[in-house]
Image (cartoon, rainbow, N blue to C red):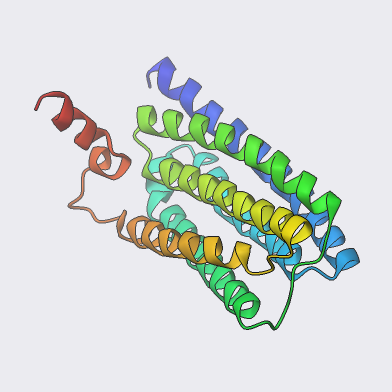
Length: 216
């Protein structure tokens, strides 16, 4: 086996380990802050962190095997389910906000947490996606999209908390959340279909499109 492949697999394992550790801490802090402020938005944000843990754990499980490719189908299915769960939560949370069933409370801790997540998550996503592309792993690329989706959700939560604190706009995060839900469903469908035997891995990871564009 080429040395570069071993290096990339090891990098993937490190990335998902860091992602899992970060999201466990983030989820606990968000749940505690959300409970203290009676904020459904922050509690939902904390639950979303554990959805990301599920997705990253699926990739960790895959790359713990001597032959990760043999576990890719199952990993992709788990990631797809994680996307669908995220979309379901975001949609329900947005509907509750728009109908006035709940209103985000002021939470300085929540604002700081969402802002920090907005910085950390895109970095982890970019590293995992670049590594997954080079390795030709559709599941790693799919998980990187899940991580990036969580960054978008962090932005939506941050926007909602700041807008509510500064302007009293309790509905601000709901509109952004609905947009995120649409993208989450789309990515979930792509991940679910990503195990088709007739689809080249290069196409799943986007490298085929990059190659065609380069030679166009």
